[in-house]
Length: 395
Image (cartoon, rainbow, N blue to C red; front, side, top):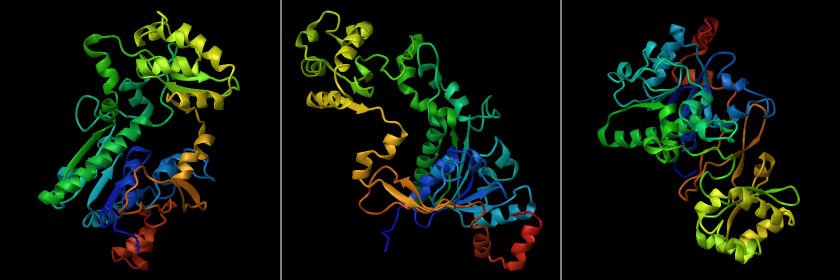
């Protein structure tokens, strides 16, 4: 028998698409919540069509939608809206990241629902929040990376670059997730639901704390230094003689001394006037880089890593995706599991954090509308009622 999970018995209804809300609700499903994903009849969540990289399925979608039930409803149809309202009677959480104002126009705001659903937690995820001059602006991940300043500090001196993953969506999804967990704890104390208003800009803005304070009161912001650290050196990627790349990082003068002695085999370099403090190493990084690369050119990637490990200098390989799929640490800790999908079994990473009291829920990625009939029958509908909804294209 499976041990109880933290969110067993919690029902989440999600009007979701793309990444932010689906990423949030998948975390809730991981902890045992029943997540009913409301999708458009036919095509479903438009993220299903982003690509076909996972045996014909979209990479974004399979990542963020396992362990959910798919219910198709055309919410412009009054009969479909009646089904949704029936589901909300027993729901604990409503999550939505529709276009700005769309949920409120359908009568699904916290203010509209709270009088009849006092224990319901409503979480609205949007680009800029429910008020303020940017409230109605459309917001996509790249646009928020730009507005939050992430692009300005990421890339090379010549060109800013976006992060390679959906950082704004992920940040908003995680803050929605933790806010919902907090609201469930609060409801346990007060008996009342909450309204949560999560802004992608504010979520990513929180993650920008270091560069913001670095540029405090008009100071110069961190320079764009590609994969190197903006103010600590050596800290970043260095090529080895066999074409591999090793990331390394020095944090203090003790490590610099050992790095010179053990890795570069040049103890005298530690007291060189050009490099004897981090500030000087940073100012003279071009000269130091040539010295490091000259030594690394005589060694393979494995040999460089061995010397860095011997010196207890933090280091890592710059893995590509194939390297992460095959990562020995993930394999040793048994972090990959198989989950079902419309295209068969696919591997999925367990959520971060092992808990000795329960196992995460790792159920299938649903097909569009896979659970529609089962959910309608739970609501007491018979064959004729379900067929009537199909005929009116409500489902």
